[in-house]
Length: 178
Image (cartoon, one colour):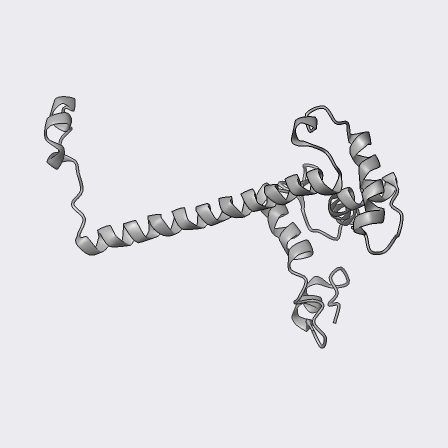
């Protein structure tokens, strides 16, 4: 097939449009609508989470919407400490401190950093034996590790869980919690 001149493309679309069967058209439409529905549900879920955060700021911390731009982090911390007495956000302590708030916010990041520092996570790469190794943690790998460590906790904590195939492959670094 030879090149189609630009003028023919505008006035004769049958030269370059691929003809799809009815079944193929329905499959493409179904896949596209499924993707759109999943994205719409995810967006709705995020809006719902943002609404919850807004209500928390308005009702528990008594910070109005127009104050959000000018309120400092120190003021938010002070109001969190005050709200603990009324709402019992942390069930382990009656009184929160600023340090407790920082620990709660940074615990996942600190956990990942500690596992990298103790070389529990195998993210160190050697490209060539003569070059030094470097740490490589892509966004996808980080997302998967956080999902495994912090979101999926029912598998390893189920009573009677025995993971000999994982323990045998990984040696002393990974242990089953069952």
